[in-house]
Amino acid sequence: MLSRLAQNIAGSSTLEIAAKAKQLKAEGKDVISLSAGEPDFDTPQFIKDACIQALLDGKTKYTPTSGEIELKKAIIQKFEKDNNLSYEANEIIVSCGAKHSIFNIILCAVEEGDEVIIPAPYWVSYPEMVKAAGAKPVIADTFSTNMKLTPEILLPLINKSTKILILNSPSNPTGGVYSLEELKALAKIILKHNITVISDEIYEHLTYDSDFVSIASISDELKKKTVVVNGVSKAYSMTGWRIGYAAGNSDLISAASRLQSHSTSNPTSFAQYGAIAALSSPLGKNAIKEMAEKFKTRRDYIYKRICSIPGVQCRKPSGAFYIFPDIREVLRGKTSMEFAKDILEKEYLAIVPGEGFGAPGYIRFSYAASLSDIETGMDRLERYIRSS
Image (cartoon, helix red, strand yellow):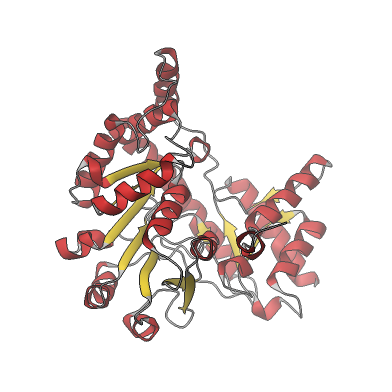
């Protein structure tokens, strides 16, 4: 017997495609994957060394549920240096990845009947997390506004049940980055209607055309209404380490810590020491810069190639490592899910369909892959579309 919750939670379309791609690879097929949501670079050696030393020093026991105090201090310093935000240790929780941090916050901030506004396109897990908490995801359609939430779209969706707005900048899947002016316009409505913001900033350091701005930094009043979520997965290529964190109101953070104490307990002890090194060492900034420069080169190449294909429309992403073209003109009766499955079977190219992101007719490509793989992938895409 499955619970109603279990029956209502949808699977991840990204994982479905990834599983099929792995199967084909195991069969010896020459699969090019442009689907992965993780950097293709190895974790920098100085971070590994810090983790190894922690193991050698016996850092293998339970830690405080919400994270080691040394890591919290490193996170606090990061917020001060990068975002001009000031937090105390009791306003920080470290979890098993940024996804876990978001889930904890949602579970502690909403109840049945509450509504959570989520701009579409959205990361696949946001609506499912909201549903798991018993609340209702309210999808804000941003396709007519350059895939960014605007006051005109936000305001009509707010009612007495509205509890949270989830913002993701830079965005997965679009690569869009909100400017200071865009965030200030949203902030007026957020404060007027007393809405809590979950600001997912996991791709913060991967911006290419403008500086990143955290919505929490706009004003002290807005900071009090915002939970900032971040982590080391994307910027430091530490996806498998599972270290994320959230900063916000101490009561909400304390509740999330209590919840976490009954689910995962603390994040992995020795992984926390790798995160301390990532956030604290000057080598961390150098590692980020090197990766970001390579991602920018790849972005420019894949954007040029996609725009050269007749019938495919595309916005140039400003951050993260995704590009999200509109392929409706070339679907020829297929859904984007069917398109993704077919091109994987025929051309051995793994991409992610837009349905899971609330964007049927779109496809997400990750350029967290080598330039040679991207070039081959674009050749296969173009060949498939021209032959269909």
